[in-house]
Length: 220
Length: 277
Image (cartoon, rainbow over all chains, first blue to last red; front, side):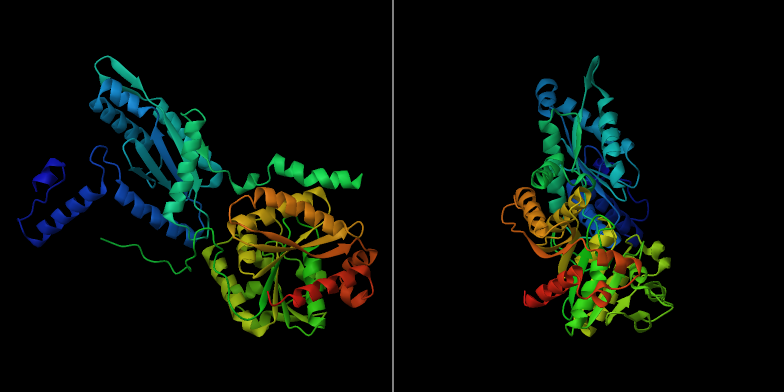
């Protein structure tokens, strides 16, 4: 009970140990166990469940779904320079900005220290980069006042991948694909969003070049 | 706590093909990427050639959006796949005899509403193919153009794939794109190629080698992923094909001695020859 109180959970008002009271405690505990204490976002455990549910849904419905993974740029420097309290404030500010940049139906989770993930069900493939860019922009506009007169700017790098439609993939594989794009965004200089290339741009110029090199030679 | 309800869709491993139908007829998907390269022409004439070899063949018009098998075969169906989908006809009623000694299941013009792959379309197509497999030796799925989800799903139901391409650069590019998607997304290890409208003998072999080379570089680069593109036939540009198409006849029936008819027969023999694969 103390734990719940401390966590700021809404405690049941009914007669202690009555059925309603017990139900209220169970609900509060479930809520507590699925949320991240610092940001109030969905926590890692709950996120993994949501992700595998989404994999099932995509396999059944064929609707495109996007997974974005993001990471605060140079976060270690914030912690080292301004202290962990400032770091926590930055994380909270980013969490809020990200939540406001996406739809209510999307799941925003804190999956690690300065890592976040967003599941976007029913997100058209053509909108993927727009959404990712919006999230990136919303964060980059943040001014986090970590101490009086001390305002920090913060940026994130994002990676994203769509779930393969109609095919039952695994949530692990999906995470890996999205993370690979996140590494790419980091490697390409941070504060940017990289999405896994779609089927539309399937044949690269290099492939075309190789495809026609010989046929043209031959026909001459 | 609610737990996730296990969906009824069959579960497959990551990057594996979606639900494949097992047992019974050999299923061959005829696809191309680009439209107008002779997919339906090949499907219909190949079916006739297989039928001539004593095989029981069904051609299913899987081009749900722009079905034209009826046009190629000069058929005027009263009942189509559309009626089966909507429950107005049974499968038995919608399967029609075609000239050439095989059976067809035509899509019909009302299928546009089904040209998007919804769970309903997916389940219905799967059910139809599954139901028909024990009754035939071959089911030829004549897919639509492009690499849409309906096309990819149709191909995923087939055990064998035949990609039709012409020497045109656009056709080659689209054929390459299709093969690449099949190799990477559906985990195909083997795809057959038919080069249609070849300008001269040997062009098919050249094009196949060309495609194989680019595939080896960009698809085969994945470790442990062996992929084989096999040239199954070459149909040279042939005036009798044009004649037959205009008259809405089968080349195999009306110009049996033509180069094109011989090439299609050779394709059928090749498919039957390695049926143990």
